[in-house]
Image (tube, rainbow, N blue to C red):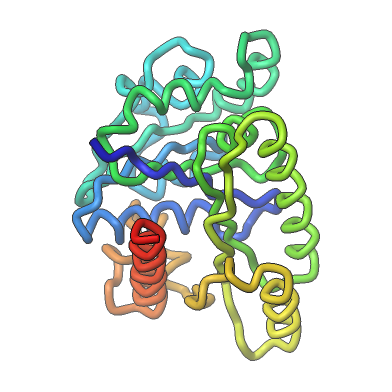
Length: 261
């Protein structure tokens, strides 16, 4: 039976569109009849609220899953969007980093949980917090690949090099098959000179890993979470929705080519 491909969506810099990318990639994959599970591993819970889930109503969360208090399948909620399920996060997750220090296999808690449900999905997307603590390390140990959303700013390049170094260390110690899925430029504004400089710099270092599709700065993308919807459901005709659909098509094409290879 085919197993889910597990993708950590990570960047040590905050505000680069990680949760937005998780939510919209999941929604677009679901529309294409792929079964998707999103795991919100960020205490801010942006992925959870972007799917219209009220955090106060959450009974079992990523916190319970990481600490082994509940099994991951007990935490799964079906969202209102086709083929998309979610393991929600609440602010309790903020304490998990400290509590994980005292448990066995602290880096591999998420991996062990995901192994029990891998056969139920086509894709599992892990939304990581913007740090390099035990929670994102759990995501890097559990995933097959890392998708890196990044903005075209100078500091984003620094964040990228730190992340690449973290992936190298995790590969060495815990997850020998981990690879970079690709780099996705978000909040893209082609009018800025710095944008072209950052894009060229990234393409020089990662020529085969940079997605051709870019996600533009778009009001609809920013508005959609407050309505509890992915942008492709909130305003399908918007530039933001079209960009995420194009990105999903490119993403699936790459996966198809890799399976053939």
